[in-house]
Length: 75
Length: 271
Image (cartoon, rainbow over the protein chains, first blue to last red):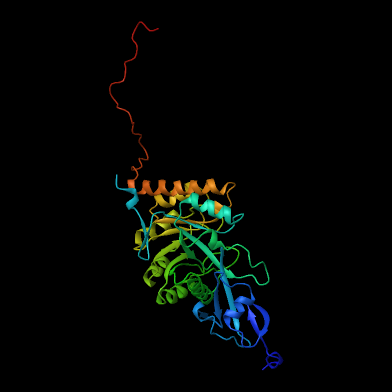
């Protein structure tokens, strides 16, 4: 796959931006890395909802496409 | 008079006191949002779903702290979605975000200039969402056939526009709204186009079950006062609808005071 993987790093797409993170990072680890722990967020991984209860066990993989959303003002 | 408290709005098996539903966009800050929503008396408050900001202030206040789901029924919407797939994904995320909450507002837009709904995509998204157990309130055009189709798919409310989103142009086609209302077995809620309190009252007098608005309140010079005006407009219109207006008499007046017993003209010794 990639040189990042060889160096123990992988690349994710998070909300449309590339992000390099350590390999074997969990979804919970990513949320912590983004300082979103405890915030009201929802996460989609490769088009599928990843329930909050599975954040600690779900390891992210190179090339994962993630969407992390919040509620904002709107009509 | 029937007990006004008994005149509740029922959506997806739950009842709500207020027939005014409000949005949370375009306010100065969360404090103004909260104060205006309180003044509106709304039970159901719609919010948009967006990507969390990366690399920005993580301590930025969260809208759901100002409008807590414990006090309001949060209605996540799909504003900004142009395909059925994006709308469905957005509402799945919203359900996860709001811990299994199923009442949602579906809107699939057709173009960024008019924000007119894309009906083909809207129908497709509605079918998927209903099948997945969502209680779908759906923004649509004022086409009576489409409104009926959305109802038949299983939407819990159809929400035709009165005029374009954010235009404040009021109710441009009351006749279509009447046809939709007369045919509907689910609540009909005017969504979009209301500009001022009389528009809200007219919608309710037509027989709408509720009104959803955002810009009319948020873009008023004094949003909090306008929120109160909208509350009163919706209540006045609903009462007028339930009371049943007098028939119009086009070509003859009808005095309100007794016709007989008026005093006579002064004869002879006029002052």
